[in-house]
Image (cartoon, rainbow, N blue to C red; front, side):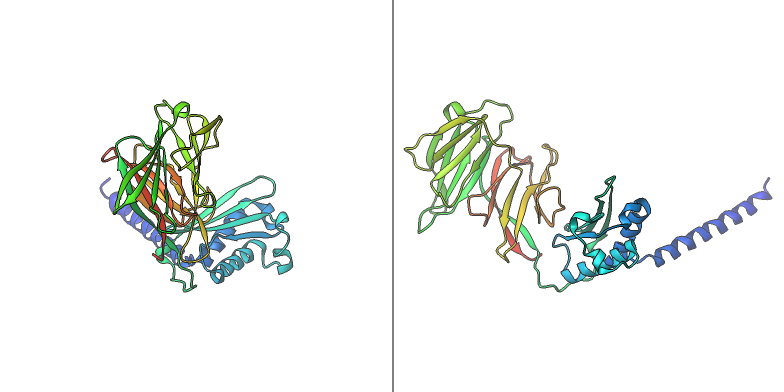
Length: 337
């Protein structure tokens, strides 16, 4: 028995060496460039969906890469999938496309998603680490999210908006709680209570209440409130009472945010995680479920996102899990990483 052990050890070592050499060879053979990974995605689609070989490819670059690189990846994908079909076929009407490809960028990855549109719908995904990609000089600066703490208190805040003062007027911070609407004004660098409006019949006694504020700079004194199953209209003037009717809009989970760097408009949302864990604010080029292009950690779950500055900045209400306080942040965009 002891004489056989060396032979088995030699066979095992030889087998392991051969397996290792095969893996190394395969790793060297794989093209990890964005164009190579696009070809890899096309091969996966072709292997699992024969219908994908027919018709055009609907290519969607959601500002993930430059247009030049997007075109190179698109050409590589189409060439691999459709066997170098003519441009006339590739450029067919999008309504006849058998495959749609989406390019999205997260803070760490470039994500390629392919979906078949004809017959049985299927999806394939490939993620490329951005750290290994060559830097593009396409002139486009990706924004980053920044936050500024405006207010904090122990009483629950359902929603809040910051209204910038015009023509020398003071900035106002409007806070919605479960039983009142409060308006704070910025005086000598500090927030002072200027107005309180009880919600009356619209007040909610729910254990986990939700509410929302809608404000338009085109009607700077008017305010829409959603709380306790009712929709109310009021103004920021003290003399005007709330006018409420039964019924409320669907909860708002995303808010538009305009970039000061260029003309682009983004979607701001939370990652929708566990209410007992810190959250992240996410910036995406389109509404959910598109992948985010930037993120910003906050010290607890995001309870609401609203805007009172004509999309130049948004307001987010966060429950700070460390302190138990409800905090209001001003969320804005800055240029570049």
